[in-house]
Amino acid sequence: MVWLLIPLFLVPAIAVGQKMKVASGNFEFLRGQRNLNVVFDYAGATFYNEMMSEQDYINKRIDEITRDKGADEAEVWRKDWDYSKSTTFVNKFLASMNKNLAIKSSTDEGDATYTVIVKTTWIYPGWFAGVMAQAAKVSTILRFVETADHSKVLLEIHSTKAPGNIQFVGIPNNNDRMSEGYAKTGKTLAALINKKLN
Image 1 (cartoon, rainbow, N blue to C red):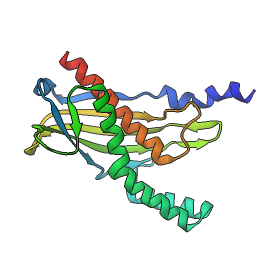
Image 2 (cartoon, helix red, strand yellow):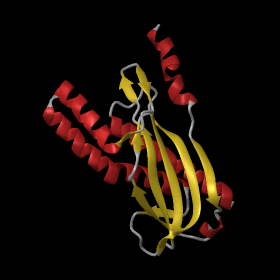
Image 3 (cartoon, one colour):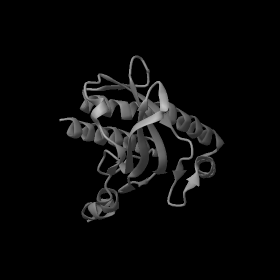
């Protein structure tokens, strides 16, 4: 009987899909490009429906983990959070882009004429409770600029509520759920670029 109820618990995670909207510009400048530089920007990101700041989110998680598992585990989470932002989220996005797009994305500027700034605006971390789960959701502004001058914006795309989940019953770790939201963002962006250029 429990297994029959699982799809009902997961409906909110599935029903709310990602949306990508071109706010300004077009894709023509990407035609013929071989490389794309990627920069991540978390400044001003908010969390949950309460739109709490990143510091408030960190404090909330540290308080929760300290209460449930102790201060040492809270410190482990804090380090994982910093690593996720600097490495895991970035790598997941890049892997999805490079798997689905001929233009190769990298954080190594190299000879890339253009850069996409992945600016995180909002994150819902989701939750996991065994047979019940809620996917993370990640909203970003994807701003394509000239690598030599970031003030020259050629294309801006708003990505809303990219779902972060790859397993039917959910992902226990908050940071891992969020990382899948960045993977989904990269995959959807690659598909949109392909559609516009082909």
